[in-house]
Length: 109
Image 1: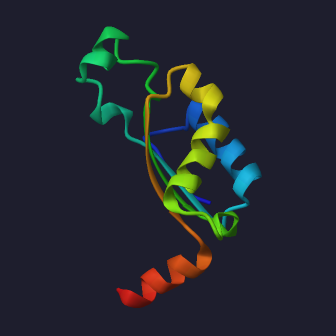
Image 2: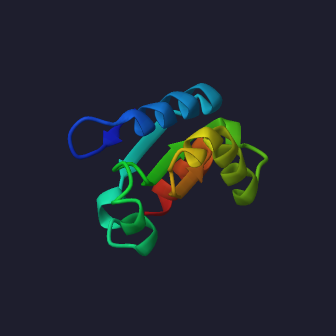
């Protein structure tokens, strides 16, 4: 499973990776810290830029998503990360697929 971060992952990213890996048993999990792109937002400025781990893009392929629509998949992830949201995680951009959907997507390319 890959990580796309500037330098070493921080505690929020590490917690996200651990929780999502345990919950979803993904075949692919890419977490990208995009916080630096959002530091100019008013909410982030009021927090002094946050802790540097406020915005992430998450790509995950997991068969735990079988039978779930997009909203259910996102709710599952948001629920798993509720502690991180209560401690300053502000936003996630999610791309969730089953392995079958990922294979079909690759075949269409």
